[in-house]
Amino acid sequence: MKLHKWLLFILVGAMGMAHADELAGYKVAEDPRNFIEDPLVLDNLEEWQDLKFGFFVHWGAYSVWGSRESWPLIATPGNKFPDWDRHEVPAWHECGKDIEAFRKMYWDLNKQFNPTQFNPEAWAELAKEEGMKYFVFTTKHHDGFTMYDTQFSDYKITAPDCPYSENPKADVTKELFNAFRAQGFKIGAYYSKPDWHHDDFWWKERKALGRDANYSVVEHPVRWERFLQFTHNQIDELMTNYGRIDILWLEGLWVDKNFKWQDLRMKHVARDSRKKQPGLIMVDRMIHGRYENYMTPEQQIPPVALDYPWETCMTMGRRWGYKSDDAFKSTTTCIHMLVDVVSKGGNFLLNLGASPKGWFHP
Image 1 (cartoon, rainbow, N blue to C red):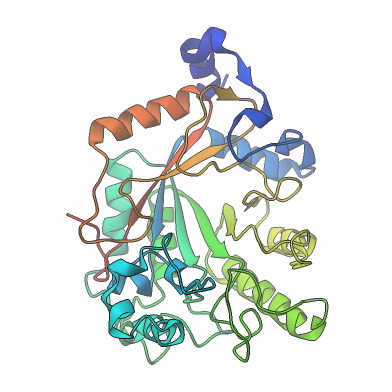
Image 2 (image 1 turned 90 degrees about the vertical axis):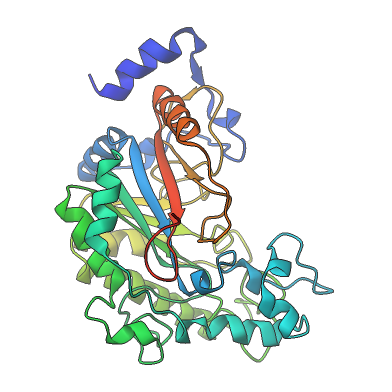
């Protein structure tokens, strides 16, 4: 019997199993395992459920400012940004609170990004010392800055306009995946389905006032098709050039065929990715069904045990990305949350944001 099943009997006992709709934000019609036909995926998922403790890292050019990752780019009517802490970013005031000027300053952060203290082996050793067993890394967030050597975008850490591109370890995704894999970790590639820097998602000729594509994909199918191919190409690079990948962790629930017809043809993503990575777990977050192999409640722990595979993803501080004056949960709190999650049959994916120099908050 697996460890988590013993813990469920011992620590949960009479509490029983929760119905799938008792976890806020996750009204699941049926166990996601019922959609999985590939035995290699089921085997990988069962192994993943026994790992219990994972390391999540958000890292990108936004760490230069210590701003919230990607989200300050979002505009709303009247330029009101109460949710994304833009008021904390000096550039917002320097540009006179002009959204387009601010976006240009944000997207130019790649020209300052130079993590000279980056040491992937030290990252892996740190996580191993803490008892973590799998690693999920933001290969690309919504802002479109790619943390690996993609051949389908010039907005990347290995581009000549990024000072770190001259470093032998400039492809930080490859360096990290190799270092963590060498320590026995399962590897998860976080990838953002939306790309706010890409002209075929946020069409530069039009205002972008929300987080979804700023044009009708029905009226402009050729433009959407180009973005679709771009996305598939980038995911294929991750599946082809970066060694064994165990988890494809897709973010951006608003890019979905049921939301303004923004279809990414997930059937093709799954088919092509698993040809390169047999047994790959797919996590199309909060798009319940065939391509969400386990659930990922964010910043919350369910009150009782759940009867399907799940993982709480949670920040150690207040932010996903790096913030120099962030406040962190105590060691005791983190340990209690880990025990709470594991006792209910879940995994605990604990996040730290890496600094612009390539390490973590002291």
